[in-house]
Length: 200
Ligand SMILES: [Ca+2]
Ligand SMILES: [Ca+2]
Image (cartoon, rainbow, N blue to C red):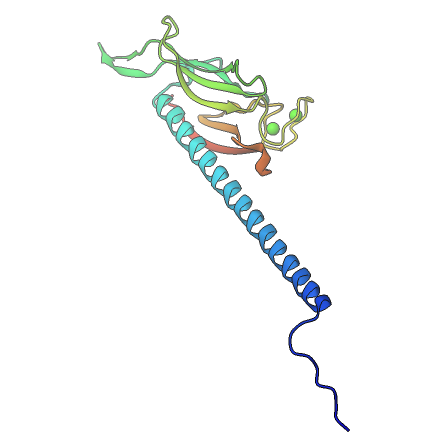
């Protein structure tokens, strides 16, 4: 008896199955690559925002360098912190007394292009008109904070703004919360904190 030889090649059904499997494999690979790229973009955006926040805080600390407690107005003590301070830096000594700079200011102002965030500005002379933008994208409230009269994030400040200064003793704690440039990436905001010591 002669056994019928199987015809070489694939049947149409086999080809369709193979194509279906390949489609699933390539689809999964595409999804994986897209998610990997999205995660990489989100990580990069976060790192850039954190670096920006650190640079701004370093500038703020630099501006507040040497400031005496009595030259910081209002005194940012208490539970609510402060996001608008005026201050004077020491400039030297004359006739045995410390001389002070003109009054400067750090404050949050509205951003006409983005009403959901604030802009942190430095005013070198409150009697002048010069205004230096330190950064945009400051959130109205600190990360994890809600406007409810409660310290939601447990940092010792109640309903603090995205830029907030608080004094405890001679230690000045400064917080900055920035909105990420692309909310589509998933994360919402990052917060950085630094501290500096006031002079007596
Ligand atoms: Ca808080
Ligand atoms: Ca709150």
